[in-house]
Length: 182
Ligand code: IMP
Ligand code: MG
Image (cartoon, rainbow, N blue to C red; front, side, top):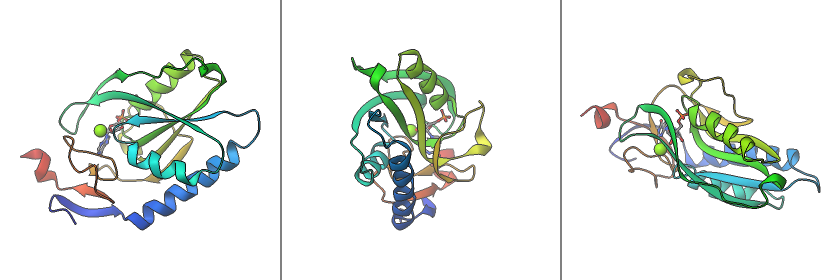
């Protein structure tokens, strides 16, 4: 275990089970000729989750990416969502978009993105998150697919960072508070 991690919340094996379960539900829900499934990875935190999830989905799919920022270099949200990399597609009105997020905290990022993509004319917009911290919610938002609900603690690994570090850890772990209160 990394020296800055207090404890492991989800082991690689547990993550694998959760991801496979989500993919099975997505496979069932998006089956049908009239669907054009587009997995929309929200960079950077969701990149590991998305890579694993797409391998488990058996339906035809396309992938795309957006990058937004709502956090500074600490563990508190600013409440603002900025689009850093936008989704540019001519066929957006034919796409059934599934937004892939690493974690829902205040809910502001996903709530904003959902409205934004609907406004841009997507055929449908649903949301999928690996982790959910419902205790922290500031806006009314429930994801359509939730991997696991976790307590209100700052977590890193499996794509999630603190100050751009720890993304490559193969597990989700609770960061020692002294790392970000120093
Ligand atoms: P929200 O808009 O407050 O729901 O924040 C969602 C974003 O904040 C996620 O996509 C993450 O990038 C980041 N975030 C929230 N909680 C954590 C955490 O515990 N560890 C790492 N990043 C987090
Ligand atoms: Mg982040």
